[in-house]
Image 1 (cartoon, helix red, strand yellow):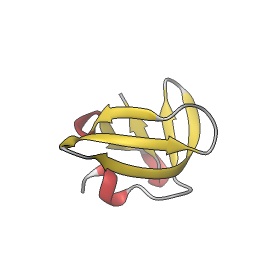
Image 2 (cartoon, rainbow, N blue to C red):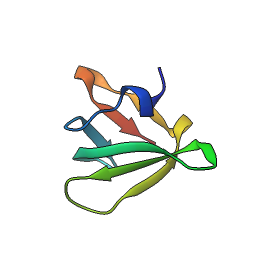
Image 3 (cartoon, rainbow, N blue to C red):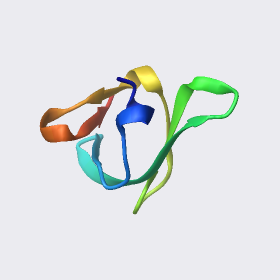
Image 4 (cartoon, rainbow, N blue to C red):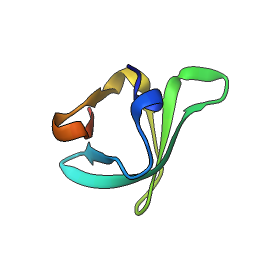
Length: 63
């Protein structure tokens, strides 16, 4: 399952050792391999979908 289809508001994402809460996740227009993750706090993150993987306990991890 792709991250943008499984990732939901309120999910936890580990980024560089820090856990952040997702406000929204969507694919970038025109580049379906890119993912835009908006967090409740902190900057928006744009990553390649292949760099996002399911972590433990229903969370997500960004390489």
